[in-house]
Every structure is written in C-alpha cells, then in structure tokens.
Length: 507
Image (cartoon, rainbow, N blue to C red):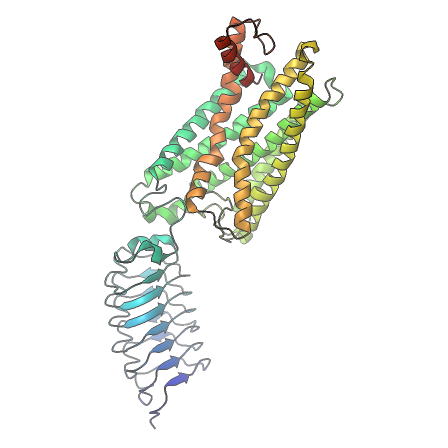
C-alpha cells in the first residue's frame, strides 16, 4: 500500500527500535517526519534514502541513540534536523555530507568526540552543539562547513576554531571578559598591571610586616597595630593571587584556549580563588575592627571603653577563621556549588558581576554584595562619627595632652586607609547590585574591576601606613619641634612639605 498524499508523519512515543531501508518506501512524499522519543540505537547509512522530499526530521528524545553512521542522510533535501537528548557520543567524518540545511540541532547530547571534517560538505545556516561534554576535537572539526551564519557551542574555545568566514559576534558563547583564544589576559595593559600590582602588593606588605615585627614592636602591642598588621597580611594574600594569575598568563601565552579547561579546573586556580576571597573578606572585617577601635578611642578619651590587646587578638583570629571558611566552603560543598565556583573565568574570581546564574551565584551575591555592602555602610557611619569627633576636638587640641593628640592623629590618618578601601569595594558592590537586577555590566568594566579596582588597595596600603610613618619619624628626628600645630615658624615651602608628611603619618 502506498501513502502517496501523506506529507507529515508523527510516530513518536512508539517504542521503535530499528528502522530499515524499506521502512519508508511507501511514504516517499513525506515533508515532516517525527521519530522523537523512541528506542532507536543507531542511525544507519542511507536509511532515509527513499524520502527525497523530506524537509524536517525530528529525532530528539531517542535516549539510546549512540551513533550516526556516515552518509546516513545521503541524497536528502532536508532543511532541519533535530537530534537532541540522546546518548550520541561521537560525530564521525562526513556524517552530514551533502546536506543543505537551515538548522542542525545537536544540542543536549553526550558528544565527547568530534572528528576532523565531521561537517565536511555540509551547508547549514545555523549549527547548535551546545550542552555537550566535547573533549576530543582538533582545529579541523569545522573544516568544509559551508554557509554558516550562526554557531552555538558549549564553550568559547570552540569559537577559536570556527570557520574563518564566520564573524566572532555570530559564534556563541562570546569570549569572557578577560581571555582571548591566545592569552588568558588578552589586553597588554592588564597583563602589565597584573605584574606591577602583584609585585608591589607582595614587596610592600612584606616590608610592612617585617618593619612592625622587628623594628616597631611597641606598635604591634597596641590594638590598632595588631589590626593594621593583619590588614597587611590580608593585602599580601591578594598580591600572591595576582602573581599566580600573572604567571599562568605567561605560561599559557599564545595557546591559552587549548589549556583553558585544564587551567580553570586546576588546583592552582582554586587556590588563587581562595586567596582572593580570604584577602578581600579579611580586609573588609579588619577595616571594620579598625573603625570600631578608633571610634572608641576618640569617643571615650579617658579609656572607659576600650578593646584590650587580648580581645583584639581573639577578634583577629575569629576574622581569619570566618574568612577561610567562607573561601573553602564552595570547594568542600560540591553538591551545591559544583566545580565551577572559582572557575567561572580564567582569573578564578567568584565576583557576581555578570548575569550568569551558575552554581553558587546566590552565595556570591550574599557574601560579596550583601555582606560587604552592609559592612561598608556601617564603616561609613563609623568613619563619619570619627570625622566629626576629630573636627570637634581639634579645636581644643593645644590644651589636650600629648597622648590625646596622638589618638586623634592616628584616627585621622587611619581614615585614609579606610576611605581608600571603601573606594575600591563600594563600586564593586554597586555593580553587583546592578547585575542582580538585570543590568549588563560591560566586559571591559568587569576586567578592569578585577585587575585594578579590587587589588590596587593591597598595593598602596603599605605606602600609606608604613612608608610614610618611617619618613615622618625621620623628619621628626630632624625637626623635633615640628608637629601639626608648630609649623608656623618654618618657610612656606617647608611648612607645606612637613604638613603633608605629617598628615600621612599613621603612628
């Protein structure tokens, strides 16, 4: 019996296991064939050879299909093929030879291997191979593919081997905010800044810690000295993070996309992400403690309410424990976070500044946006109170004893450290809130935020609260009569220079 006028056949959910070459010999005029959700295991060569007029073929949902033989669709005039949600694990050479399609959908399969020339002599407008764990492929996987206008892939690295005629903006997903096909950090300026900020942060903070431990021990026994020394340790971790990323960028220079998966899933990337998280969160908490300490000192000048050195050490230890737990939780709780918390980008940061909602995004928002934003609002209020106390009490500074003047001086200049840290984190919080509410943060802004805004404070802090203190001590030893209230007798130029040095002195 011949079904001459049959143009659409839906035989989905029919438990079909095998299709022979004679299966459609009586339905030669079919335009649309739906074979979805059956029990097919293999698409044999020339099995659809009789369907010369077939335009649409649906094979999605055949979860047992593992292989498409070469020239399986030979001689057809198909316009759309959908092979999704199957066990297909390899695309063999010439699998779609001779077809002229508007769309080929191979998404949501288990494809691990794509052979060279897999799409040779295939003409197609849109190719979708997303949601496939492709591991084995070479640069020639798309060779011979004709007429492609849109390519959707599992990862950007496949766009690096796209047909040369296809524009990059028509290949998805687009490259991330940092990397290119050749380099982890695609911009030379950012590569340079990685090294500069990393080296400055490490050398400056090591110098600061060594200076306080060996040459300024009396300050280390004071509460604010404990807090600021630990802040230097937190900044040092950020410098180590920067150098890890800079070294990885250098090692993979010119071939990064080949090593992208290996790098982002490596222990070094996870370690770098942990360092950046511990450093940033420890900085936030230590700045909070510095603000509280200075507020108590200024608000209660007679010591009626103070943080003892023992309590300060306990608070610092608690801060480090909390920050380490926050950083390693995404690693140990893989059921919720998966394995992509620190591997979202090549720089191993978990900042939620994009609209991507990958595993752990809510945790990132709560920690990096919610917690940090609330903390810095409290810091801002505390620093505002300190500012007004300093302004009010400075009027009577000459009448105050020397120790009281020193308290005000330390509070005034620690305000600079807190302000610079606030200036770095506040825009990050704002960008995070914008991304949560659906606004798109340009990739360039995200890249500069991660490489410059986030870590720059770790590099300049040692110069703010250690180097200037040393310079000021030298000046005071030369001009012991000079302080902020005794500059009138100097020349105008010297008054200006000494006043600047004095104003930057923290201790």
